[in-house]
Image (cartoon, rainbow, N blue to C red; front, side, top):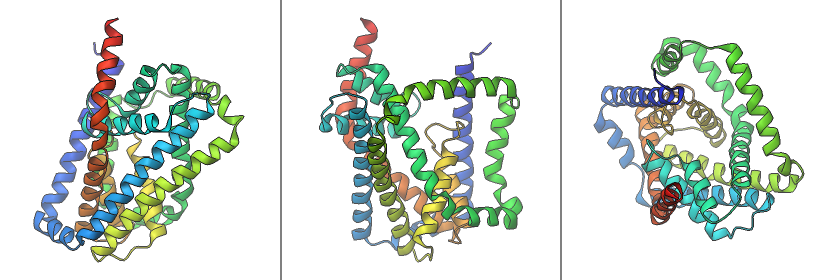
Length: 314
């Protein structure tokens, strides 16, 4: 009998493969040439500016976590936080099947002799601050999204089929077990975040850095759509991207691979009013820019992982 963790891992692999298969299906239906034509409309200068904005967003994420680390009493230099953050980003993008970004960040901070409980609490707070920031922009895209659901009906079937597979693979929802897990999680969460609730200015600063990260990503998407000839407002881009973000948090794929691109394609084409080829092109371009921006993490991740393995041997 498979362990629950093994089953969840297999489920994520299956979800990732299904999402990628659906994405490839959409690409084949639309035609690779039309996707390339949409991409070629973007000047190289704009692509370079978008890459710069993605790098700024990555630095903003590092600063957000750094504020939370310092608030928990950890005297970690900024440059070390940046190094560890980029190592985590690299792991999320290039080592999705074995090592998660938060695991690398935890390992990197602990390797520098920082308290593991405090680091774990800072990672939880970092996630929550990121979610809170995204939640603030959801209202800008929710009406268009709900309207598209009502009008399109079956057009959302490819996306919902992934959720249906996940549901059936888990055998439905065991509500008593779920409520118990939620209760334990909330108790652990409250205990972990006590230190931050006593330092609201730190939480506010972290939220501001999260806002900078979000503004950069939203602007990148807005520019890519604009130079592909699509008319969509910055606010709607922000709201719809927030919905994509929350969809990719579902534990049905590995680090959102395939799921992010599929949900972006469907949401922006159905709810944003942009062409399907442009949605596909922008989704793939954003993933590419994210991959490139995480490459600096390759310089430090090997040291972190090697140190982790040495600790396990000891």
